[in-house]
Length: 244
Ligand SMILES: C[S@@+](CC[C@H](N)C(=O)[O-])C[C@H]1O[C@@H](n2cnc3c(N)ncnc32)[C@H](O)[C@@H]1O
Image (cartoon, rainbow, N blue to C red):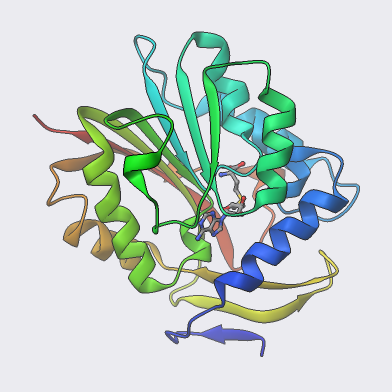
């Protein structure tokens, strides 16, 4: 299989997990393990810095943060110094091992291995409601039904005045692009991901987050210039605020 345009075909979550477990073992740098760029490129590090400096919403007071598909806790590095309690969930046990190594000395940074959206909420070490939920680069690895379920879950886990920061790889052409068992010359590995159009994402929000009183407060392209280096796909963000 390869690049599929405008088709609703499922990808295999087990292959996605294997891909990230392999990267976690291979890549020394935790940022390179989750922000996918060719070997030797500094773009992942620059993108991480740019996003943290320019886009991550700040919380007025220390609060509880949930990071779904957290990788090795890249965003814990951003929030932990400000006294927030951070709960990261990811299904790659290898990335979670890396996250625990990096943040193990901070009792307010906790990780859980689980597949989104099949989370056993009652047994999470940090209990909802969460003041900020971040979802960066996760939906691309979920099939349509799981995207809907995940967005519904956000409504259940969020505090009455919560913010959601959602940043995704999206299709920058008119149709959805699915990479299914696609051999990437750049990554030297088989890769799976669903690049939805922004219209498709908006339709998902309409049947989930909007019903849970979330409205888009800001949205836009994440990177410009050299950091926006793909032809058919791009990074796009949404910041949702919940109306009382
Ligand atoms: C591109 S990385 C982004 C990591 C992190 N959010 C960041 O921005 O640094 C995607 C992450 O989603 C995780 N992931 C993909 N599908 C998942 C699922 N169904 N459940 C939990 N984690 C998943 C992968 O293991 C990987 O860590």
